[in-house]
Length: 335
Image 1: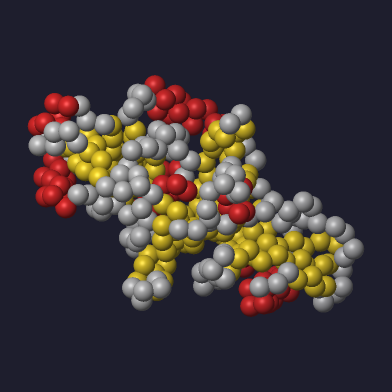
Image 2: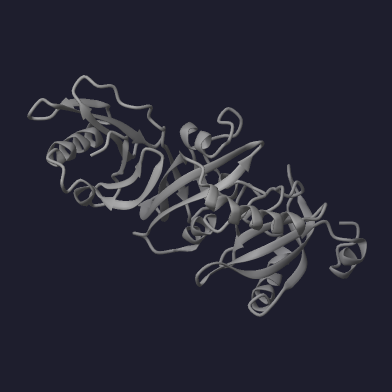
């Protein structure tokens, strides 16, 4: 085998290779990836010991001609997501290790938990936002949308456990172009309150920029930018529960979108006819949403049905402050 670090995901029934250096691999079973290696058994043992102990490991192969080095990749809740593995000549130094970032998405509640490493790999400042209990939509870059990222959105809408996803996406972070690899596995886990939640445990990794992929992404970005309007905020939502998935513009500053989806009790009866209307086209209403700080803020809400991946649909929601005439029509004169 070549002397690159292998990122081996360990959440399933057998270890799988998800990256070689900075190149993503699509969850290839380790036994297949290294089927011709005479060190396979020693590598499997080293991985198992690292998962059990949670510690780094350096071991010599039986013939004393190779060293196996492992680094644990662990979520903040203590769950081991992966093992980073390197094998090379005894006495040799490994190459620089690209640092993977473990993260966890509670798809049932729409809450994301990051690590410092996952924030860095996503091009975000790890000293600014919190890493725990943030909205799912806050964990994806705003003002972007590309074909690769649609796979991640499809995962957020897939209610079946035991799914695996591996994708990459390219986005601009200031003047820097970042390409991030992402791999995830879903499972049902028990939450703190004893209920069953669908959880996606994932890894991200900064990859080498793919110039061929960037051209398609830039076209999509230009289309997205050309349709932006001042005071209008577009996002993608889960049509089954109105959960916010991703902002396509700067996040709306008027309502508290970082917490669970809520509507004013008197407006909830509007949701059923809206759901029926956007099955065949567009629908809009003035709805009261939780205001930043406290109280309620009326927002003009338009929803369209949008296919984000093959046979996977989301809602394209557009929010803006309502006009006086719209407030009056909704019986909310003066807000």
